[in-house]
Image: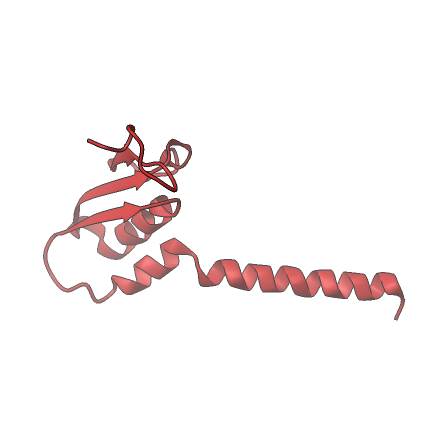
Length: 102
Protein backbone atom coordinates (compact mmCIF):
# COMPACT_ATOMS: atom_id res chain seq x y z
CA UNK A 1 0.00 0.00 0.00
CA UNK A 2 1.44 3.37 -1.01
CA UNK A 3 1.27 6.42 1.17
CA UNK A 4 -1.38 7.93 -1.12
CA UNK A 5 -3.48 4.75 -0.76
CA UNK A 6 -3.14 5.00 3.02
CA UNK A 7 -4.06 8.67 2.95
CA UNK A 8 -7.17 7.96 0.85
CA UNK A 9 -8.19 5.17 3.22
CA UNK A 10 -7.71 7.39 6.27
CA UNK A 11 -9.60 10.25 4.61
CA UNK A 12 -12.48 7.92 3.72
CA UNK A 13 -12.62 6.61 7.31
CA UNK A 14 -12.54 10.12 8.75
CA UNK A 15 -15.37 11.22 6.46
CA UNK A 16 -17.40 8.17 7.47
CA UNK A 17 -16.87 9.04 11.14
CA UNK A 18 -17.88 12.65 10.54
CA UNK A 19 -21.00 11.56 8.69
CA UNK A 20 -21.95 9.18 11.53
CA UNK A 21 -21.38 11.90 14.13
CA UNK A 22 -23.55 14.40 12.25
CA UNK A 23 -26.34 11.86 11.79
CA UNK A 24 -26.19 11.04 15.51
CA UNK A 25 -26.93 14.63 16.51
CA UNK A 26 -29.38 15.57 13.73
CA UNK A 27 -31.98 17.76 15.50
CA UNK A 28 -34.80 16.94 13.07
CA UNK A 29 -34.38 13.20 13.51
CA UNK A 30 -33.89 13.33 17.28
CA UNK A 31 -36.92 15.55 18.00
CA UNK A 32 -39.11 13.60 15.60
CA UNK A 33 -38.18 10.36 17.36
CA UNK A 34 -38.64 11.85 20.83
CA UNK A 35 -42.15 13.08 20.00
CA UNK A 36 -43.46 9.84 18.51
CA UNK A 37 -45.09 9.00 21.83
CA UNK A 38 -46.21 12.54 22.69
CA UNK A 39 -49.73 11.47 23.59
CA UNK A 40 -52.92 13.12 22.38
CA UNK A 41 -54.08 16.68 21.90
CA UNK A 42 -52.55 19.93 20.78
CA UNK A 43 -48.89 20.72 21.38
CA UNK A 44 -46.95 24.00 21.50
CA UNK A 45 -43.19 23.86 20.97
CA UNK A 46 -40.34 26.21 21.87
CA UNK A 47 -36.97 25.60 20.20
CA UNK A 48 -33.86 27.50 21.24
CA UNK A 49 -30.47 27.85 19.58
CA UNK A 50 -28.75 27.12 16.29
CA UNK A 51 -30.66 23.88 15.88
CA UNK A 52 -34.10 25.51 16.33
CA UNK A 53 -35.08 25.10 12.67
CA UNK A 54 -34.19 21.41 12.65
CA UNK A 55 -35.93 20.82 15.97
CA UNK A 56 -39.12 22.53 14.78
CA UNK A 57 -39.02 20.59 11.52
CA UNK A 58 -38.82 17.37 13.52
CA UNK A 59 -41.68 18.49 15.75
CA UNK A 60 -43.83 19.30 12.72
CA UNK A 61 -43.02 15.93 11.14
CA UNK A 62 -43.93 14.03 14.31
CA UNK A 63 -46.95 16.04 15.39
CA UNK A 64 -48.54 17.14 12.14
CA UNK A 65 -51.74 19.09 12.80
CA UNK A 66 -51.31 18.64 16.55
CA UNK A 67 -48.56 21.28 16.46
CA UNK A 68 -50.68 24.35 17.18
CA UNK A 69 -48.02 26.91 18.10
CA UNK A 70 -44.26 27.23 17.76
CA UNK A 71 -41.64 29.72 18.88
CA UNK A 72 -37.98 29.75 17.92
CA UNK A 73 -35.31 31.71 19.74
CA UNK A 74 -32.25 31.84 17.54
CA UNK A 75 -29.78 34.16 15.85
CA UNK A 76 -30.98 36.04 12.78
CA UNK A 77 -28.59 34.02 10.62
CA UNK A 78 -30.61 30.86 11.35
CA UNK A 79 -34.11 32.35 11.09
CA UNK A 80 -34.37 31.88 7.31
CA UNK A 81 -34.24 28.10 7.79
CA UNK A 82 -37.25 28.06 10.13
CA UNK A 83 -40.42 26.34 8.89
CA UNK A 84 -43.18 28.66 7.71
CA UNK A 85 -45.59 30.02 10.28
CA UNK A 86 -43.10 29.88 13.16
CA UNK A 87 -42.76 32.95 15.37
CA UNK A 88 -39.20 33.78 16.25
CA UNK A 89 -37.29 36.02 18.61
CA UNK A 90 -33.71 36.96 17.91
CA UNK A 91 -31.36 35.55 20.49
CA UNK A 92 -27.71 36.33 21.02
CA UNK A 93 -24.90 34.15 22.23
CA UNK A 94 -23.27 33.55 24.62
CA UNK A 95 -24.95 36.31 26.62
CA UNK A 96 -28.35 37.94 26.06
CA UNK A 97 -28.29 41.48 24.72
CA UNK A 98 -30.92 44.13 24.05
CA UNK A 99 -32.19 42.37 20.90
CA UNK A 100 -33.50 39.39 22.81
CA UNK A 101 -34.67 41.03 26.01
CA UNK A 102 -38.32 42.02 25.90
